[in-house]
Length: 281
Picture (spheres, rainbow, N blue to C red):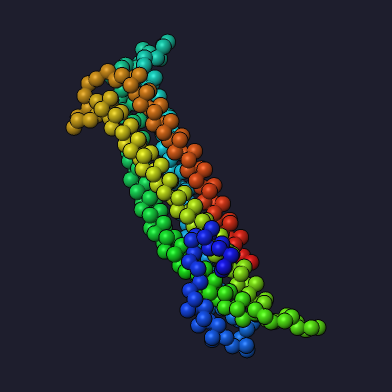
């Protein structure tokens, strides 16, 4: 309304004077108890859709997948290529050690490839969700503008009305309070929608860079283990190179998992706050 709060929450436009005049002119005393109901219902419906959108796209699933991938990589210990000590070394040739290690790597690489291939599906879903939330953000801002127009018309109608003595207040006063509450909830939902979009965008970027890191590790180890050609090559792998590459990708996974945890908490907070806004309406 005229208090300027539209400038603080979502940049909702000021009420259109012609719209306010039309609402004022269409006033019907008999329906004062339901004044502005279509505008209120539209705002609530859009808030419900925003809440539904915030509830999908849980990060727990993709985080669990990456945690499993991390365990696979962590289990690949380059020191397994070194000759064992004691009697065990009598039955453990370098060729056998390399063969076992290559087999373990191939298994992990195959499972990693499946995990990496699934990451774009999550980011594409996040992009679609962000687009839907963008549409909802605009629709909620429009709903705020419509509620503002009704509130301005209600204020004009109530101006100059003396309070009834020993009688109930005018029903429009209670109705105006209801519309005010709905407007406040719609306004507060706008930055929450942006927060949900930002969380998805950051998660998508984290997953993209993590996927690139996993692919780089897989290719680096394939070459270091002599598996980049059509047939395995007879080589003596550089254990230090393997360990360094492994540690780097594990550190990247740890950073990604930490970020996904933080972003998941943010999305849960957004969902909870949107639900709290919707419940009393």
